[in-house]
Length: 349
Image (cartoon, helix red, strand yellow):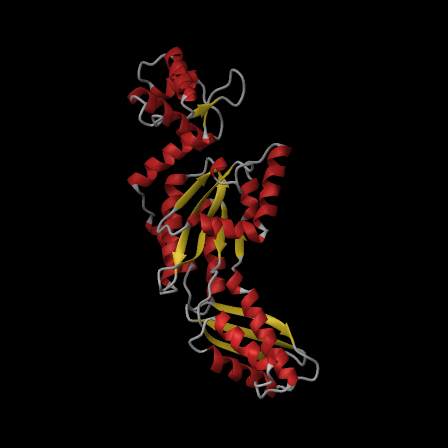
């Protein structure tokens, strides 16, 4: 069995490695032996430090981006650093807690609005892009209402047992009387009680096909539209991104810009959201994917810090976090993502 590079480091190697990582997180630039010798001030010559850096490169923790340049930590090196942070743990300042508490309050807002605010709050506090995966759930529907907006449009308001609210504007069939909105709402609410959406959809579709709904054809069309909205909306989940422009702050080269643009395009695809949610698995805490550790981010030079949030049954229904450069401030951001995921989960308790 191959020995872990962590176990093979002596005290001097650890000190040099720590200084390289600290310098990278602060500047993003390679650091050379002469600079390290000045920083460490431990009677280590540049030649000695070069030898230590060469050893760290041999075990895969450092690499040289250019010939005769300084060194940077590899993804494996950053993973070793981050794992150490997770063992130690961290906490937020009172100001950071207050800011997140204020922006993630549910009073007067739908759950979808709160998720958007959570993403924006994380983006603002971390200077990274905020990422939220809204629930993919088959929770029972508590209520559905059709609210008239005009003669040909209505607002479908759907509330699940977990407190998730989804609002959608729909087109009404021509000639539909206002009373049909109330009829459709009452009909669906009576059949959705204590049923999952799959069960309710099957039952209602059968009744429509067998003409047992006791509703006219236009109202039947409205009922079918309501079912389609819910099945294709929250149940499929959605991806909310806030502050994407922050990923461009440190971009200097054209090829870097293209990698970030490709990442944006990948995130817009539905399968990317599903893969991100699956990556959190059944984890209770924060997950960190550094660069090449996640296929979605391996070519963008980015890391993602993400944590799941749970419903009343402790099932993972969504996740939130940040996307940022691999030199993001992990020590500060990890507890921030963890705290925000718990705030959002409390709204579903």
